[in-house]
Image 1 (cartoon, rainbow, N blue to C red):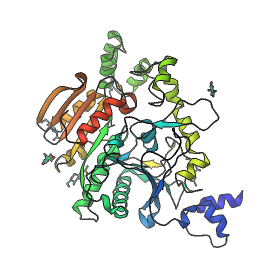
Image 2: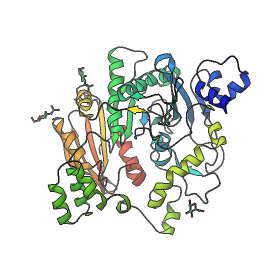
Image 3: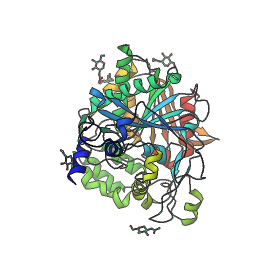
Image 4: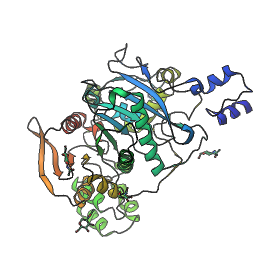
Length: 450
Ligand SMILES: *[C@@H]1O[C@H](CO)[C@@H](O)[C@H](O)[C@H]1NC(C)=O
Ligand SMILES: *[C@@H]1O[C@H](CO)[C@@H](O)[C@H](O)[C@H]1NC(C)=O
Ligand SMILES: *[C@@H]1O[C@H](CO)[C@@H](O)[C@H](O)[C@H]1NC(C)=O
Ligand SMILES: *[C@@H]1O[C@H](CO)[C@@H](O)[C@H](O)[C@H]1NC(C)=O
Ligand SMILES: *[C@@H]1O[C@H](CO)[C@@H](O)[C@H](O)[C@H]1NC(C)=O
């Protein structure tokens, strides 16, 4: 017990010479790992069985002082033309959620299937709407503490948000140093939910590095954010407007809520549309429909599964065969969790609008998308702040269509910021409306008209 604790504390730091190297290497195998990146050709439970039909590489990159911070990533090569397709660095929200969640529950190449039972290893199927069909993605576990990322010096390393943005910038320069063939590809940063704060900060840090001529120069083109937290509306005005707009509140309830001021309002009126009364658009409850949707998406048909998804994912992720297949270092970091709670993390930035304003002056493109049925991080608020940057509208509010069907509305500003609303979608839009979101991404990343 004592030995185990000692080893755990020493995990990945200097080699404890007193101990047999076999034990040490087993305990934290980072000690013999040199550079980044190992191929993953097979993953347990992926259907159909056999070699993965897409290219996956995982690895750690050390950043910060003495490379103390070891950031884990999953690199999925574009299934079109990886030599020229853009690369997106994707950061999940939380803060502290693993980017593997984006890779297997949102926009990546895999989706968890509905489990047949509670004991055998969960299975996964291919996502027909994976965004990796048109771009390469680096799913990064950020900040330190999220997913498999860890600090060598301390189990409870507390990173600040600003420091974290510089960790990401250093990460991408080092990754490009190790992957010279991708240095000229267009580069983007993306994320959703809490990453509405993180992504603009990371883009700013990368942009600062470009200004300082840090090598290799990142071919930074822009960023994308889905239902991103941007700042806090203490009166929850847009939340109530959204709930009323969706028909989740009576006119009387809405009138009382509108008159409410301050943070207590959501405690008072929130229960009308949260918890047990949470409304999921496009959710299908019938068993037959669930069967029909199998392999598309664990989430989109049964709200009870939505809450179980974390259990399913962590049962799979923490299985020895999976850890080994993903080249996860043994004994380093914590057990994998969908979202790390509590996360040792210090927030100093509570409003990302100044970052958007700065990035706008640099000509970076941005896609700000929003599933319209997200009551909390809602479209109304997003429409308000994108407008408040005061750039002229170059393509005004209009529907965007797929096969003559209105999917949502869009507007583009002269700072190259495009706002896209997706109707019938929610906080994690690609989970709820995968086909529409895939087409949205494909059009934007390929500079096509909406
Ligand atoms: C899994 O376990 C839960 C209780 O934790 C139970 O409600 C559920 O029916 C079980 N599912 C199956 C498929 O056995
Ligand atoms: C690390 O954090 C956990 C959870 O917050 C706490 O229980 C533990 O005591 C901390 N350990 C150290 C060494 O600070
Ligand atoms: C915006 O840019 C200015 C000038 O480079 C800088 O002083 C300021 O700190 C930046 N703001 C943010 C939020 O990064
Ligand atoms: C928008 O992007 C284009 C390239 O796509 C660039 O030429 C232009 O300068 C950008 N706009 C602004 C306002 O920077
Ligand atoms: C946009 O214009 C409004 C009204 O003139 C002003 O209050 C606001 O500060 C401006 N926003 C920015 C980001 O400059």
